[in-house]
Image 1: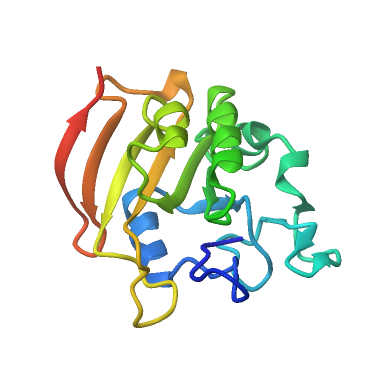
Image 2 (image 1 turned 180 degrees about the vertical axis):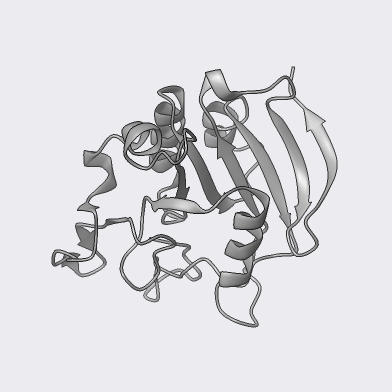
Length: 195
């Protein structure tokens, strides 16, 4: 559904990923074929899963959604079979609720082991338990510079990262790595490689 910008009563969870950042993502990687957590107003692909519950309770069925509740579906089958293009795995996108990152990231890691190709946008949490157990050995991590503005003109108050999860068979010799990515200039610096 998207980033949480504030806390307390104003607990909005569905801010869209900014268009300028998505253009940089598409230029560096490939077009997004499926959005795992979206709705008609913020989806980054015409193919997306919509939520079944929202802040006010159950959500009505989104007629444009491919399906409801991403956790009821196989993401690896979407990436490897359903949205495969010219023999290449479809690239799935995830900008989940920032208040539920470990649950989503655990599923991303599990689905990538089954073959899924997934990009996940989260706050930069290098050193957190969920990062150490679910991301560090399972994804290439891009620490994002400059900060993203989910609200135009207001940079998000935390640094963010983009983690690229790929199946074990698709990992190259330099996997995994952590780097700093200036997404506006498309420049990679400060690369740290895994064991």
